[in-house]
Length: 101
Image (tube, rainbow, N blue to C red; front, side, top):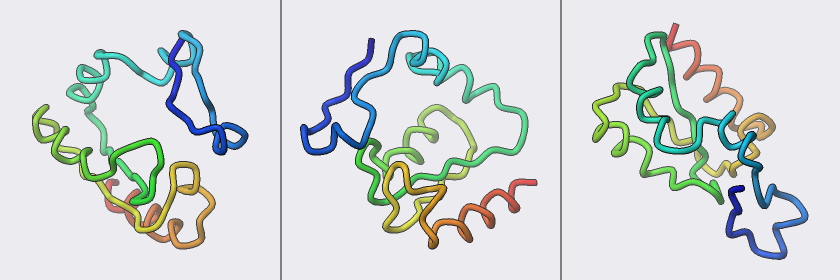
């Protein structure tokens, strides 16, 4: 079980924990480094600058330390779950994905 440090105010709106099975399906754990290093197709990481669960500015340095060449796009003013619904995010998402083909 993975429990997130979520404030009581947010717990109504966001996931507070993952079961072991769900966590493994998301690639949690140290195995993700192997997965990242073995990606052979075009890939991109998009993260919102206002993400409440991730440190957006840490993705690129982390990938660089792993020797992984996957571009990271930080989408301005987008929270964790807004990437697919924020009107300002859509053009950035489309442009990022189109550039990876």
